[in-house]
Length: 575
Image (cartoon, rainbow, N blue to C red; front, side):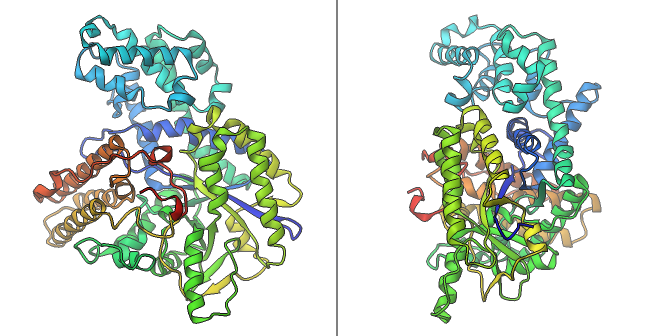
């Protein structure tokens, strides 16, 4: 609980990746789970471990936790000759034989090993940069490909994983340091040693965050099981609350959405309990997506707090003011409750959060933290008269750091050091604020449905491509319901279909559809989404319609930070 003398500050980091695993084969189609684990989730734990006075809320999507566990199981099976590593990149790292130069498999692996930030990762290491230059020659002069040896691909695989390694690991792990010093001509022993480091980091994530929670430095919270957008599962029409003229899918609602939303939360709590041994008090509903119906559901599931973006509270205050013109503008820096729901809702300061996401990467760390804290001090000064002030910085815990020097090492160290010892600001957690509140949250009659991005759901619905994706999901759910009810499936197949449906319900697929996103990533995600839908049809024994095999979306945009992050306000919305 924050003292009266200091203004509470909550840093809420959200760790999340969708399901990249093809459940019909067990193979991972993209490596982002294990790469972000060794780079970001490990570093984020290390910064907190280093500064004992620092505190934060760390939110995990359960589907991410399960995928980390799957990697560990697959690596262990491979070590004992009882199975294969289901990720092509990780398997190639320790493969006895690599594809021949000139083959499609060689080119595919080469291109995958170059999917890293050119400035902050590839060009940081001269040996990696030289390999990238050689890859350019390989592409441009096919007649020379036959002269490229497998040593090139072996070294590129090692450097790709070294480049993605967390900065705290890089500074402490002797194996990583020796491989970097060696630079080239890596042996199979080198490659297997690097896999051992990766395994060690993956296996430590759960215990490290659990220990931080036990020490009271971290509050662990959860999202819906597969990061589903709960308000839209409950009611597609909720998108009209913030955007009355939005075009919606042909289907008027998601069939059985209320039951599915409840299942998403219940499964999330089960997975969370298994990994961390505690019940979560808070839920970062996917992308801060909230509605009045969502709050009621969170209440039913015994969550005590949730959060969203500051546009949502502005919309809700504006609506309340239509009924009560004298209602004061209480602002974003305090918790609220809405209607009959007892769940406390906190709101992201978009300005502060977006400074970290989009501005400070190019600043000197001390200058960046000094500027951020200066803004916080001004907010705290203005909030002195409020009975329940709180400053919330909420953002994902992975995507910003690749744009910072050394994975944000200096910025994060400085941020925790300064805030942990600040005389007027106090790092705390939402559970502590809810458990011993200095005053009751401000009560409003209704929360206007929306997300942290622009205060709307336009990132997930309304675009023709996004709406087609919803219609495909609604059609699949209709067939799913019929088959689940007709007694043709065993209990085991029903459970498998239930989990596959949950994967299809994830919000990430809809995020990426649309022309304003990069073509390569749109292609990756729309292929993955359709693969998940095909798997669902296979699991219920119903032939997939032709529409599932037709391309959904084709991006051509160049959004800031590759589209993986978005600023919170409409003024910055891509065209």
